[in-house]
Length: 546
Image (tube, rainbow, N blue to C red):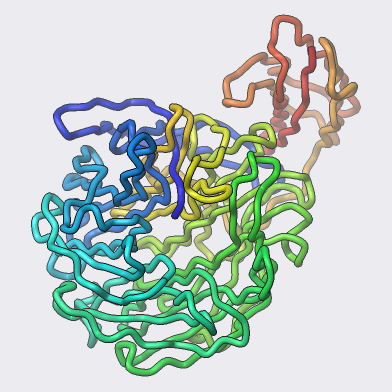
């Protein structure tokens, strides 16, 4: 089971509705070389509750952009009741309704770990674990208000399943929905089942691979021509079961047969615990997406993982991207998605990936670049050139401190976050405990406000040095060098992105400049100073101690 997120801005509640009237989001543009944080868009909880919401997912209707369906693991910590959240918008995310409980009988049999989809008929599908080992599904024909009784998909102990529904009318398997998961029995293979009648019946589970090492996780994507793609991680046989490579499979006949590559590319995932963040449990499992936009890269396949100590990842966890332009036959070398300096001690983890209708790739992930090592924020990396270059946006307007959820397994905070889109709006979902309880948060992002620059940046015409002393109390000196005369802005802001001091704003001559920053009256903590010279900027961190 997994986790959720929290913090509130621009929310109203009316009956079951909790909504936000979005304007155009102020894009949090980042310079690819320096990491410039400009501003944050408004965040809100889609279903404010006292119930713990973790392990967040979101999907969209295949033909009606007004309809969004989100879910999460839901746990009442005081009673121990576990279910799956049902959160729905029928007006493009303007308002949300739902429940922290999927009401499909048998309610007391629910054990969370949802996988969700909407099929071609607008039927909502949900698959989950049960307290008697196995996988069970439900469907809803009234936009999630009521649900069918449970249908057994598989017995015995299984991992959480993912769902993918073929919503392309030109596909020979239009309307077919696939479930994919790992079976918890030797040799721990990837298995699947399918339904062509909206989860009334399912095909018998079929084993996709015969792995040399146990498998973990699993994700699914469906191309516009109906080809089904699957990926998973092959893990070492001993604890902490580190992800050693990514496996891949494809089916051109609706899952009847599969072409399998057990080791599509090497990886070194971060399975284990993050000691910096309260010993929360983490993984590096591959997430999968395919371009079905009909554009120049239609059919390209993309994966993201969290890795470290294997290039291009550094010694701290980084988000690593691979692509295939030939249906998964071969894969590119890894490309580092997060654009902060390598080996800088900052941690990125839990990526989610989505290809929007323009063919741009969007990767959502946790990132602690703008906070202390025990906390995190949420970032989006976006590429419009097939993943060769990336531009980043700060999604979260606040940070939070991850901690394990008590009673749900060692270090459990949740293992997944999600993202989808409707038209020009991205809809990310993540789990955040800043209200004291993990909740499902979102922030609508208008992609027309995001700058996705695939051109190489020009060399910098300035140098920004680390402040000295650092840490400091209460004064420190910030030094920079200009190669040419230019307009300069030097700004200090806190860990939440609020401006603390504007030290410079005007023309400066070429040469070395030293500026004294006075921190009297400020609380201890991490602060950031941002130097903008013309259209280029760079940001460094400094620590005030009392």
